[in-house]
Amino acid sequence: MHLLYVDMSGNVGRSDETHFIMAGVAVFETGIHHVIQELDQIIARHFPEREPSEVELHGSPMWGGRGFWRHVKDRRRIMEEALGVFTGPSRSNLRAFGMVVEKAVVSPDDPVEHAYEQICTRFDKFLGRMYTRRRQKQRGLIVVDKSRYEDTLQGLAHAFRNDGTRWGNLRNLSEVPLFVDSRMSRLVQLADLVSFALWRKYEHDDLGLLLKIVESFDNEGRVYHGLYHKTEPGRACDCAACASRR
Image (cartoon, rainbow, N blue to C red):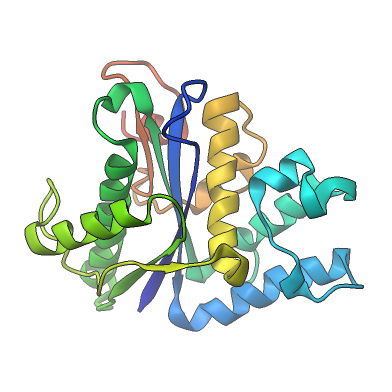
């Protein structure tokens, strides 16, 4: 089984933000422990006086130096090292997914619904390709950070299971999503860092963090299936998601 850990960046109700982002980290079940170990080792190197479980990797507070991170000088370095697991020993078990939605483009529809339908569909197709290409029949389970959108996502999951998405039925997903506290899940924290890297690129035109992981988004034949950008039709966008489809 593959698990897709999901987190989000952006606030649907804020008029000063143009994007909503939903990102995921897909990992094969036997690789979960190794990814957690790698992330805990990073925390242990920087904070030897603390138990790794006491330190939450959370993009926005780390970047802005809030709360626990207020007096930590190497915040960005720690973020980069954590995202480095995508190119470390666990890289073969990891795939990134990122759904970037320009809120005005989908209005009056809900960008949360749009992003969730996309990430479910793309994760399902990723699992389907594994069977087609490698004859590996895998099921998938989605694990989401608890948020204000929990009720919305639960309702969508039931609808997708019964009626499918606009692109067809989801054939490889087991059960509705599970919701967890991000403080208890290193993999949700990693998904948060992926989401924040996308946020920095699309909301602030800062590619720094995203460059560390762009090759880790699910891709095949130079097309980034796992990276999606909903923008104005016909707009000339040179991001990896759009450029790979031209």
